[in-house]
Length: 299
Image 1 (tube, rainbow, N blue to C red):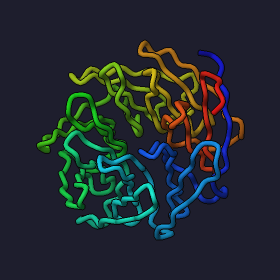
Image 2: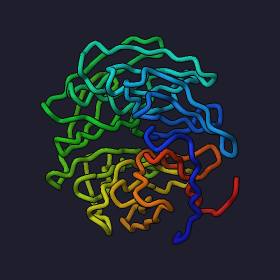
Image 3: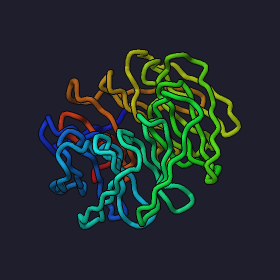
Image 4: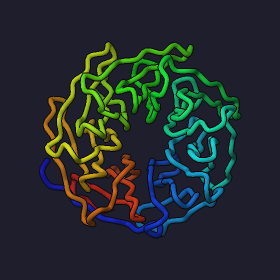
């Protein structure tokens, strides 16, 4: 694949900061407005709507829950939020202050698992709001993104420890050190090939980790591109954002990389996800969502 169609859809003003994006069970795109304290919703082809939170709470990552609602982290407020598809919001304060919750994903156990960047912990919250925290075996590791692996565990990046971690449903934690120092991994996603794919924002590389701990790193054409988030589409293709390079890219299992420039300069792409229409969507901090269609189909 060498050509794609990219369309931008304005969903907020430039200061609001669309940050993360996911597809909800209602067939809509849901996204966080990190600087504006709102959760947004967009049905492709329609006008966006938003739901207000505490303006300073810093909603960050958002993910579908096992209960038909969307769950999100409030980085600045030390809370986990829940929003139903018709806009009803609940918020759950964390036991640890100044914990900085960031990544969140549904686990195989029917709960949501999340990272506490500042506290160095992995958290678990049930759909009725019961929270358990697990301390990491290293300090200052800054756990960031988290995803469910195909092996029944949750996998997460340790941004300041240059490692990928796994936590089992029993709370047991295993760490895998990266070959590259100062790599600063952020986004992580489970591939269709059984491996975990992740981005190294400081090293300009994409990484692949097998469940048994084998790590391969693939340098990007632009090592200063600052890859941030990563996802896997319906065909098993791995997509990532380059927030420093103003691009989105794909990588094959053997490490072949193709990148695509975004239409607007300095648009700061962050979160990336497969949309309800089968296209790939990314959140741009300039106030827009970009639709990337490798099939060049219109919705």
